[in-house]
Image (cartoon, rainbow, N blue to C red; front, side, top):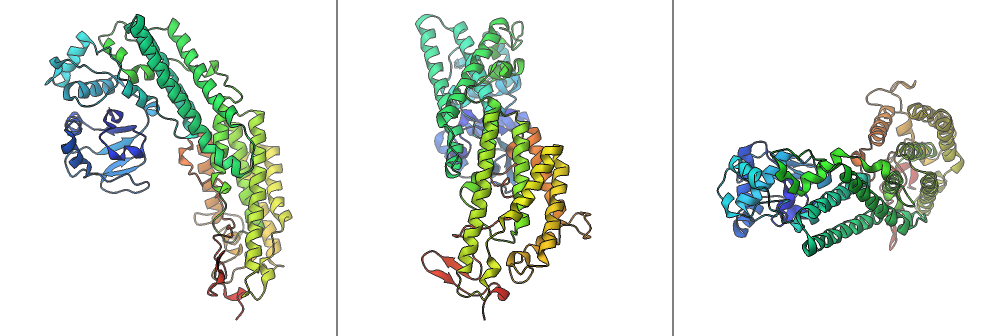
Length: 535
């Protein structure tokens, strides 16, 4: 069952981690009752309960409640045997009639919490759940709208890949509430309620605009990509308004979209979350939504591009064996990822042009940062052979990328493109390593060169990748990325996963080769690469 944690937003300090959209799951009625009773206690008692909670910690598991965003420690038995706490957003919930009943019951009988809909009458105090259900089937829920709860329902859109779900939900919420207001109110009271709805929806639209653009602005600015923020914001607004109109028109000819007309559970018509969810299940508005300067598919693709290059926009951070061929392979994998995403999302030509420009900036910026780092290393007076750290041969880098582009554009087969390009880069490296003394192609010293990667590419040296091979790791990474893009479940991709598929050069701020370097004091230490340091 879902207990709508938005109703307890004022009770939990860790809601700041979840934008007041916490949902608690109980696995039985007994667990549910225990939770509701504890959450319904007075402020002083409640604060003592809160002291027994640890704040969510991403990627950490320990005894206690498991959540999508982290874990919350078991409250030392205070809430009985409840097994998990799950944080989610209203538009991601499958909010059922049972969920609506549990939440209305909690608010009406125990009191002290806001809720989608409730009964304020003292008649329900002390009722058990079955008695309460009988009461609301006969008398219905109160017609008063809890606007505080509506505000929480309108919150969302906290990741670009959820923009479609969020705009669907917010628009359905608006349309279903508008219908309810027109049924329940008349005259000035109706006008007042509609005004309040419009204010809440306008806030939701502005928040969605600001979130979407705010998540992209820094990346594109730092990458030098000119993209109109107003066009992005206006497209979000146009999509939400068009979805409202689509839902509104659907309701006109399908007033019983929730199937409650002849049901004993007509009380559900006054539950905010239930009716919005029912409307979304009944009708898909996308065919009637064109967007503005950008379509919804465009916005998802642009969000992906911004997310993909977010870490690149602030500079690279690791100096390893990045020879020209492994850098070219990193470029190739990101080229493939970018093109697959743009195609899968159905983005238009304007977005494809943005993708091309951003990718070009990414490759240029990476090569330049690598050369800046190599130049800095050559300035170390302790090096006996600075030319071991010569600038990149950019033709070698782009030769590998060119192979990927040519193979993919001709075949459109992503898996074969990966295998072919890896093999091509491998052969280019093997041909070069025999005739060079460049550090990045060597094996010696504390920091090993590219040979450490390429000579472990295939376990048997003949192209047959096994479990421990680097080739297997490459294919596994591509499988994850490709599957995420294909399913549009982009939550499995971390912010840095895309452009960091392979190792790359560092910024001059973080380089720690042949000792250390500080912009204030210069070089220090001589304790790293024996073969590169003068005795």
